[in-house]
Length: 113
Length: 112
Image (cartoon, rainbow over all chains, first blue to last red; front, side, top):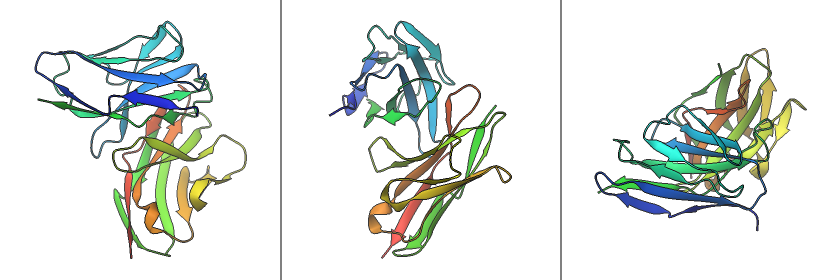
């Protein structure tokens, strides 16, 4: 079955630690996206990538980093510079950035210890 | 610039009653519009999309939405609510930058 796989489902971060959230898709989509979801605030775009080896900052990129070395993978690193990382993180992909019909993974819930 | 406003952060309906979730948007270009549904601790599932074809769009699970350019609206409806419809619903717009901008969501409760 084609889809988007996010792992882990739950993640805990210690003070000063970087953590990496995984996102893999087998839909052969060119574009991939990372969103942060906080209660009552909808989804906010962190980073997006339209093609391999290229990515752009979204609305709330500070304290986050990404890479896009393979078409099917778009990992997100939450760095120690992100002072309020507790949130639900969602990865999405679309066949291309223009049509922008996005399909989502099941999410990773990140908490701070 | 583009934005989405969802009127009513919480909506309650009785089982079998009409569901109406409101969404108004702003966009500097003809938009693409979407409704997504989210169940607790899960990702978003695409319910339906408007991409400049028919203004009345039918989606999954009996939902539909009508694009009204004059009112800048894209309200979501379902004739008869089912208990399984209880979830959070998000309206989203894709405008000139082709990035999705989401509304803040409407939590739908279905009462027995």
